[in-house]
Amino acid sequence: MKKGKVSNAVIRRLPRYYGQLDSLYQVGVVRISSSALGKAMNLTASQIRQDLSCFGEFGQQGYGYNVESLRDEIAEILGMNQGHTAIILGAGNLGRALIHNFQFSQNGFRLTAAFDTDPAIVGKSIAGVPVYSIDQLDEYLAGHPTSVGVLTVPQTVALTTAQRLIAGGVKGIWNFTNIELGIRDEGVVVENVHFADSLLALSYLITPRSSENSEE
Image 1 (cartoon, one colour):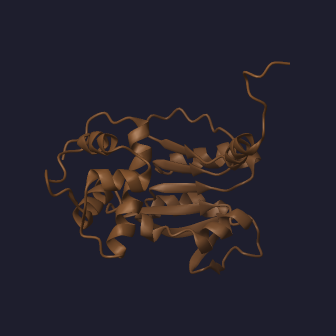
Image 2: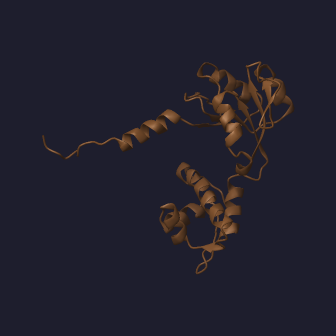
Image 3: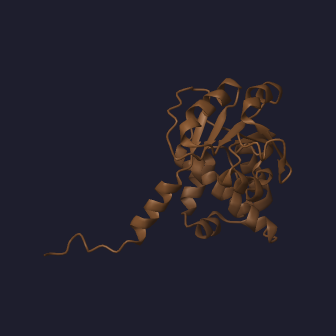
């Protein structure tokens, strides 16, 4: 499998490929052409072939792609079989919602712990995930190598919490705090999730507006 410099746009499409192929596999589809896959995903067949060519040669001319095989190949490319671990920083409403509802395991992550400052929940478990005091974070990271920290803490402590994660060896931060962290460490990847930006983009798209070419 080759894996050179891959554009961010291709990386963003890979999870979509995996999800579509997994859905096809679950309903018993054995093979699919690039044209049929593209139609299902609103992409062109050439786009799919171009994206996959970044990682190697997949499929056979006249046959298409074996759905299970391609799904597994993309899972490997995405690192879903690497045994990644994650912890949640902030077990408030959003943190608890992620613990209860987001399928970390189906995406290749094992959620091992949550951290908070609220004495009412520290020392307890949420859906089987133990909740520790935030004061125990550094000690925990020293004894439990962690791949990703999920930030759902208040904005006022987002940067300092992220810095503690980095000092503890965490290489990825999934940032739900709706602020830019300004992390410049080349060994750390920050994935920002901006709910407000997404909602405002939706607002723009559903807002009626007069034609730009209309005359007054």
